[in-house]
Image (cartoon, rainbow, N blue to C red; front, side, top):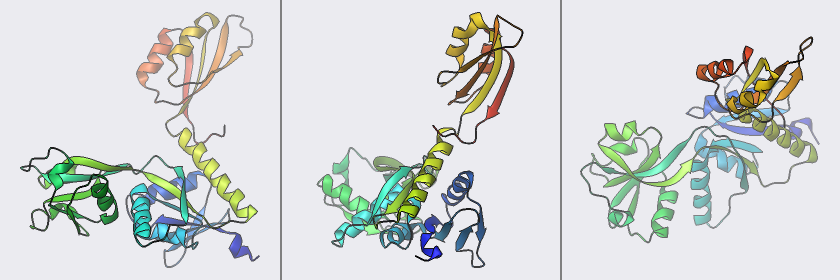
Length: 300
């Protein structure tokens, strides 16, 4: 098998809200990349991994067609593509294998502020503008609502003002865009975040081992994203109180201090934010020489 066939290809959004997070996360997993001249491919320097920078809507198809082995994309795009393929009578040849806990948003129906909404029945016989026709159609079907989805690309939120639709169905994060256009969120269809998808085509043992390593490293980076490593000295008699004050910590490491029978060193990984108040409370409990360090990665 040629060497190029042993390289893992990962489809990543070229430009958008997931781009920087996706590439940064892979770099934190140890991948060093060099961009090609056309800026469409990033070649892995230290690992046999290449990144294809493409439109997010194209990522599920590239993975399904086995052009790419993995893809990082929003769950909203994955589910829309899955429903589109089902409607065409085929199944997407990809599977979701990991949640990345960033790019959080929701696909929601929004109504003009002056329109009453009392539930899904308020959508009967209305026009709803959306670029997610598959997900909206599925929602209407499950709720037995006869409404007309209107495909609208671009700024969906202006559709009611243009007289093109009565409601909209679009991605919402902060909700500020809806407010700016006189709309309010009335129903959530899907909670979305960035996910990793993998082709269903069989991979060689070498490629599957590399995929498993990538997922393990992603898990190791994400688990300690907000974690801190705390080191401190304390009287042995204060250990129980100290342990109770350590935020989100597993059992800490306790070491005797050389030359002291009644003092110990405590080392702990805290999986929650460590605030100044936390340190002040630890000090009040008897801790001293407190040191807080960031944690970049961890393997269980």
